[in-house]
Length: 218
Image (tube, rainbow, N blue to C red; front, top):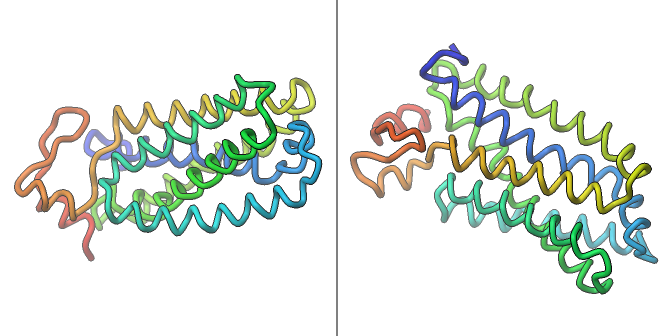
């Protein structure tokens, strides 16, 4: 059923957006000291404390924004913003240390805010009758991104340095934004009600707000 015509796109977008988030998140979080050393940061402990403080702040910001913005726009915006911060870091090799830390802090804040959707969005993609299996499948697909990030990024760092990691992670985030732009439906009941009778999905199909009521309230 998850890969039937009715649910196939939702299963894929639910798993792939999750995987594209976990790839840079796990890789950068676990190997942050190595990255800081490669970025010529002299006090990696302070940077780690700042990084984790921004993670906590980002989650709080994400909770607020996710309740005020449509799910689809929130996903696309956080993917593109976090990708932009990493790609600027990768291109601007000789950026001043202060600017490097600002860009990296903005990335940390944005990616942690985006992680709020990992808990809400997969649940909202599926009807009640198949929700548990759908969420489980999305999480299983996401582990591919987590394993790939944890395994590949230290190898890449040793071979090509932190700039290559930022390029790869930024590209993965950009791909996640494109996937959400092409496939991600709006699942927020609040915005479905705001649009009254109908809401457009990326495929051009029409989805009634009553369908979202069935799939998001239990």
